[in-house]
Structure formats: structure tokens, C-alpha cells
Image (tube, rainbow, N blue to C red; front, top):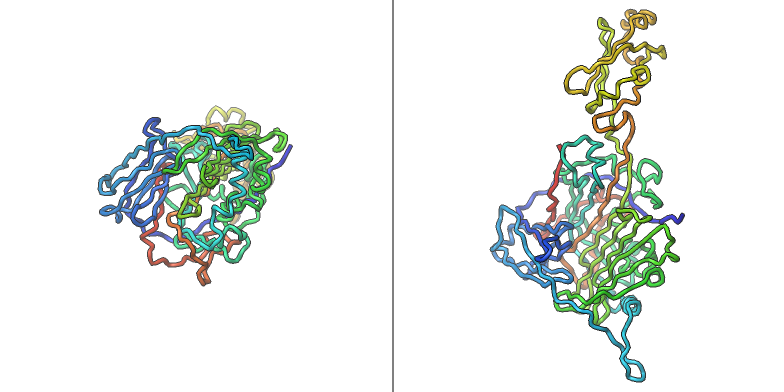
Amino acid sequence: MTKLSFLFFIFTFVCPTLCSQEKISCKVLDISTKKPVVYATVMLKNINRGTHADSSGNFEIPLAFRKTGIIRISSIGYKTKEIKLSNLKQNSTNTIYLAIAKSSLDEIVIKTSKRRKKRLLAKQIVRKAIENILENYPTEAHSYIGYYRDYQQPVGDSYQKAVNSQEPIKYLNVHEAILESFDDGFDSDKLKSTKNQTLLYNYRTNKDFIQDSTLTVPYDNKSKKYSESVYITPLGGNELNILDLTNAIRNYDKMSFSFTNIFQRDFLRNHKFKVKRVVFSDETPLYKISFTSINEKTSFDYSAFGSIYIAKQDFAIHKLNYNLYYKRKKNPQYTVTIAYQPKKDKMYLNYITFNNFFEASNGNYFQLKKTSFHTKQHTFKLSFNRKIALNSLESINRNFKIYYKNEKLKVVAVRPFDTSNNTLIVFIDEKSINRINLEKEQKGENYATNFTFDISHIKDSNGFTIDERASIKMNQYREFFVQEIFENKKLLIHKSFIDKSLPLSKSLITPLKLENSYWMNTPLKVKKGK
């Protein structure tokens, strides 16, 4: 079986409190299907600063821009729309509809020496796009200020059951930042060059959502935290590096992710391509080219597919979406989406998202929490963290073993303590009590610590066995959305750049005078479970 090799950076989170901003909430939908327009770009027209819709089509704009602001909403394949913020409601979500732009399957043609027209094939278009990367993307120093976030999303209801929540849990471990990424140009090494650095302007753990530290432990690739068939190296470090690493366009001549590998060398030979149609980004016609992995190159254990959008005129790559599945499983092992946007004669980063699937043994499992012994009744009171399935108490000799200094006490009965079913009363045979002379023993100062409990086989009301750590299936998201682009901006002389070997939570915050001009775009709706 082929193993995927992918470098993951593990981190913990601590952060300062941020002042909240009042915002206008919006949702972008396809006018025909009523489905979200995922990651639509939202720009404040007069200042060229903005944000993006999330995977549900939601976005927020600070109320401070309402009086004079005009937003310009665009997405590949849709007609761009402009809206005055003053026309939007403050206290409810505004729904904005985008219409599909006219598309076609016009041919790109090239002329041969005999002046005959020849159709340019999908693979040729992709090859030209790769060959033109240094022409279409900036080799001069520039920077981006944008909104970063990472979060986890449960797959199915395994996490909801594990934490015994009555309500579905959609998001947890949400962390957010505003940062500025300095890039010395596409001819520099994004990860290793000292001229490629990041400043952190704001950072927070969003406490509106569940924080579960058992799911942020390092990958051990075995039982605590792992992704099936994917080798994950627990080196520790900066979570932004993983996004930089997965940007196959920016790192076109470096290793990125399986099976794109080194983009300029391996992308073409590991996949087959097909031109689907021509779509538009504003007035720019783009070829939408679909691709699938070649089994002989990537092994039959994996299947990858995606789309790449390339401009007809200059072969600039506007967007790349890559999805890799293991043995046709429903959830992808990972998904990468990278989007660039034109500014003058070059393409600059618009957003990048990376999602990987993992499984973990959750620390919030069914367990014994508290015990107490009642001398006169010869009973133990055992309290558990969850409701007990009473039909699992049938075999008391097998399920309940209690010892005092390694001397086994005979259990004669087990009864629920009250209607909550979280507590049991365990009755002990009088001969067992007398045999160890418990009346005398209890006069000792620390006699209670000599009791040990071996409780097995019983289950909670959700069917989880005691002390059994359930396997939790999760998607881990890391996302960066550019809010403003600065052309020809060189690295500042500054001592507080983010340490690339440390997590964001341990980085210094750099004060930003224009802090109200950039904002946390957190339209995630489903919050703490109860």
C-alpha cells in the first residue's frame, strides 16, 4: 500500500482578547440553485479592501463602512454584482444572489507553419500555464494583509455522542488572526528565505465555540491522532507553514503535496485533463479544465480529481482545486483550493484553504468520576460522567470488581441511586467487610486510597463502553483570505516577525494603526453545544 507523506505542524492555542466590531451579515447564493457561492470575493470598491464568503456563503462587513461603502461581489463563473451597504439591513442576514455568467466551449487555436488552425488540447493549456508562471506572478517583493483561521468540523455524529451533547456540534477549536504576509517574489523560497516573513496583528481563540484540547494533540499516526494511510510527521511549529507548503502554484518548483508533488514537473505526468467549458471571471474568459489522477502513477489505493481555471489570453492560473480520496471513501483525505486574482499585469493571492481528514481517540469518554463508601450500609456510591444503560448491569460479578489492599470484596447487588441514572449503589457482602476488618482499617488516615475499582463492560446511554475512547472523525481546516494587496512592498525592518518554528499563539502581537480597517470574518453560525 502506498503511503502519503505530508508534513503537518502541531500547535496549541492561547491568545489575547480582541475588541469586537459591529458587522453587517450577508449570505451569497446562486440565484438558480439557491446553493452557497463558496469563497466569493467581496471587495469594498473605493478602497480595494475586502473579505470572502465562507463555505456556506456567509460573510461580514464592519458597520463602520455602511454609510458610503459599496461592495463588489465576484466569483469565477458568475456575473459580478455591486451593492451599496446603506441598502442592507443591520440586524438580520442579507441574502445576495449571483447569476451565472455566459459560458461556452470556444476553442483556443494555434497556427501551424502551414497556417492551418489546430485546437490546443487541455494538457497543452496546462503546460503553457506552468511555463508562464514567472511571467504572470510577481517576482518583486509584495505583501498581503488578511484574515486567517483554523477550526475543526466533526464528520457525522461521533463527536456529538462522545461529548454527550443534545445538540449537533458543527465547529470547534476555532482560532483566528489578522496578519500580514511578506513575499519576496515567486523566484524566492517562500518557506526558507529570510525575506519571506509574517507579522501578526491580532490573534484570538474564539470562545463562542467548544475548545477541546484532546483534538489538538500531536499526530502519533497510530491511535491518538492519525489519518488512514497518511504519514504525518509531528514536528511541531507554525500552522501557517502548512498553508504555504500546500500552495502548489507559489511553490511550483518545490515539493507541495501528493500527488501534485513538484507542480512544474509532476502535475502534468500524474493526471489526465479535459477542457470542460469557458467561464468568466469579470470580463476575463477562463478555461475550466477538469483533471483526474492516473492510477499507474498514483497507485490504485488513491483517486484524485479537481479543476484548474486558466485564462485564455495569457494562460494565468486563476484557481486550482485538488481533492484526494483513499479507496473511494466518502470523505477526502485532503482538499486544497488556491485562488489568485489579477491586479494590473500580475496575479496575486486571493485565498487559500486546506482541509485534511483525521481520526482521534477523544478524551471525553464514559468513565467513573467519584466514589464514596458508606460504612453502616456496606455500600459504595459510584458516580459516572454520563447516564448509564441499566440493561448493561446484568452480570455484576463480571462488571464490578472492588478491592481493598488487593483483597477482593464480594459484590452482591447493584442498584441505581436516583432517576438520573448517573449514579449507582453497590452493595458489598458483610463477610467481605468483616474478613478485612474494615471497621479497624477505616480509622487509618488514608484508608480510602487503598480502594481500587475495576468497572468493565457497562455502557452509557449512547452505547459507549466504560473507559473506551471512541474514535472521533474530524476535518481540520486552515484558511487564509486576503483583504488587501500591497504591490512592490518590501520587508519591513522589524524584530517581531512570527517565529516559523513556533505556533501563532506564542507569537508577539504587532500594533497596527489601521486595526479597524481589517476584521475577523467569523460568520460561522453553529456555536457551543449544551
